Amino acid sequence: MITQELSDAEVAAAAARAAAAVVRGLQGRELARIDKGGGDFATTADLAAERAVLDVLRAARPDDAVLGEESGRQGPAEAGRQWLVDPLCGTLNYAVGNKLVAVNVALRGGAAAVADPFGGEAGEVFHTDGTRAWGPDGGPLVPTPATRIVDVNLDPPFPGAPGFRAVDLLAHPGFAAAFRPRVVSTSLALAWVAAGKRAAYVTDGGDLTGSVHFAAGIALCRAAGCVVTGVDGAPLEPGTARGLVAAADAATHALLMDLIRSGPKGTR
Image (cartoon, rainbow, N blue to C red; front, side, top):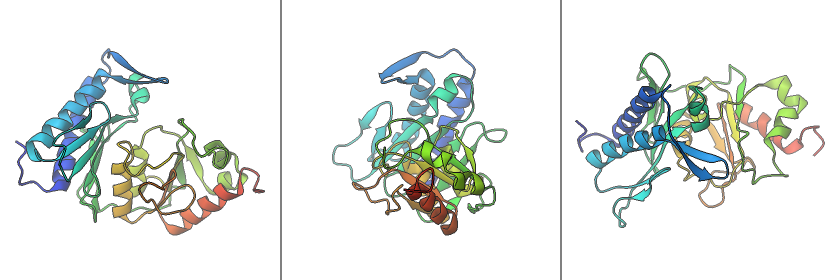
């Protein structure tokens, strides 16, 4: 039973874990699709997973508001706190049987959790209280660039073009010399940066600080000690942020910024 005595970090983790169980349980079944326009869609698994998150939040934090990807804004209009919920990040992956997905639950400006429904035997949950960050084993998250793997998001829209294009970064000879690219198409990659499974994550975009897709991963990376900025190298400030670069350390971040600024042939 979820109670109001839990900390915000414990609530976030419990909500993410509940949704991950739903996602795992529905994997492989025939799912109805709900068209959202522009080629985007949700499935009945997205809806069921979001309901699981909402059940936890309503029980533990009934006075808080919620912004869910599928259900929109809910809760008291005068609430001073808001939870950001992405119940299944990587819907297209999931719909075709690819298990690279995540559940994202974040209290705006505070605690957060990211669940990998298919990590380990019963899923994995990464969580933070906004200051410290922990992995599935309860130990602190320790980012490292040792893998040299950089995940680059290639999903549209591309508001940074032509100033920034992810394909240009991938085409840069300096990128191939320093890193190994991956494209998993889910913000689970941000949790992997915080956990040392990725050296960095790069995505185009506008202000992602309040995004249901990215808020939890950003919170994890910040709490773990990663270097987190926009694709222009500027701090992630609400209202002005542009895209996202989350790197395990300062050296990796500096090299990525050099590559982004110089363009695919190093001549920009």
